[in-house]
Each structure stands twice: as C-alpha cells, then as structure tokens.
Length: 319
Image 1: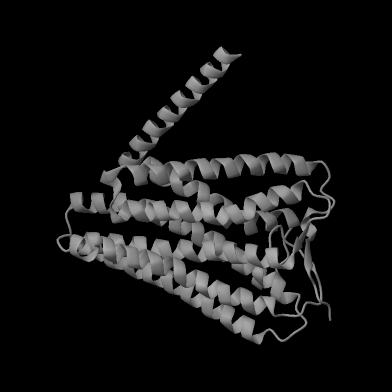
Image 2: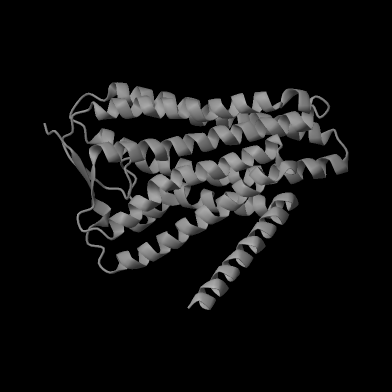
C-alpha cells in the first residue's frame, strides 16, 4: 500500500511539439466559452425585460458552463506546457468535484427548464402564480446545492481511500479512475456513486422526458399557432438536452466498460465532449434562437467594440 500524495496524468507524456498546437486550440476554445457565456449572463442580468424564469434559467446554464470549464481548461493548458504533468491528490479531487458537479448541475437546470416550459404550456393562466421569483430561487438553489453536496460526500469518501497507484490515464482528474487505483474496499464508493448517478442524472432525465410527453399531448389538442409557439421555445432546450445526454452517455460507457477499447485520440475526444461542446453550444443556440437575447448581445458587442477602439486611439495619442 502507498500513501499517494500526487497523481500523474499519463496521456500528456510524449506529446512532443504537438502539445503547443493543442495549447493554442485549448486557449482559443476557453476564451470563446468565457466570452459567449459572459455575453448571455450580462445580457440577461442588465436587461429587466429578460428577468423571467426562462431567461434566468438560461443564464444559469451559462454560469454553470463557466464554473465547469474553469476547473478544466486552466489545468489543461498548464499541463500542456509542463514536463511533469503531476497534480496533488487534494487538487485532483477538487477538480473532479467541480467537473462532476458541473455535469450534475447541467441536468438539474435542464430539468427546471423543462418544468418551466411544461407549466407555461399546460397552465398559462396560472404560470405567474406558480413560477414566482421565490419559487424560482428555491428551485435554483436546490438544483445547485444537492449535486454539490452529493459530490462533496463522494470526494470525502475518495480522499479516505488508500491508493496502490498514481497513474491516471486521463487528461483530467476522473473520479472513477481515482477509485480504481485504490487498494481498499470500494463498495461504499461504488454504491454511493450509483446513488448519485440515479438522483442527479436518471431521475432528472426521466422527469424531462415526462414533461415533454405531456407537452406533446397538449400540443396535439391545440391550434397550429399554439404548437408553433410551443415548439419555438422547446426546440433549443431539446437540442441542448440531446447533445449533453449523448456526451454524458459516451463518457459513462467509456469509463465504466473496461472491455471497450478505442483509439486513444478518439477516447480523449469522447471523454472531453461534455466539457467543450455544451459550454459553446448553449450560448450560441439560445443567443441565435431568442431575438431578445440576440439583440441585447449585439448591442453589448458594439459597445465593447467602441470602447476598445477609443482606448486604442487614446494610447496612440499618448505615444
């Protein structure tokens, strides 16, 4: 048995000069994620007409994207330029906590968005009485606190394990890979992991599917104009849900099925899809689909562009 204090991310070894190309690509992706999600957050925060449950939940998705990628990209960019690729056990567990909390938060927020659309379509006259600011605040708080509490307990359980190895064949600290390195009995960790999977992934997904089945039943009995408006607000949510669900399903299968052998490059792409594509896709889909957000984003971009131009002109005058 070993008292492991550091883990080594083995996939960064022997990358050669290609690591600099990956660094440039990762840096551009991270800047794009922060920029686009910040536009969505600022547009909804400063525009009072967008202070509605649907738009507030969209901003929650953007906040969650920034939260999750902040735990992944800075560490990834550092490892691409590092020669050792080592990470302390505490920092590794913390990264795993944030990344998996992000994934669970995404599903609980998507569940709230499905509930919001269901209430708006099935009970339009009672919508404002049901989705009150107080009710929305409570739901959002629970959707954030519960996954973090669960993964906080999971991280404490992982931190107590005695390790027999310190080599992680991932580009980030993966919770299940850490558990597999343990010499101790991991039954408690496995059972609690299945509990988290059930309550933060399977149950929210089941509720989302139930909500959309009810919405489809209501739409079939409604007018063409009603169906068009309902589909207009639901389609972006469905696109985001399908993309994220496929990404999470691939990541779970890839990590839990030991006999599944894929090329290293393909396995890395599949395992990182849920950390890269949704944070970029979410603001693009909602920014393009909803004219209120698109218009506000365009105004903010023009103001930013003017400010940058004026700053450059002032610098030139000083020089």
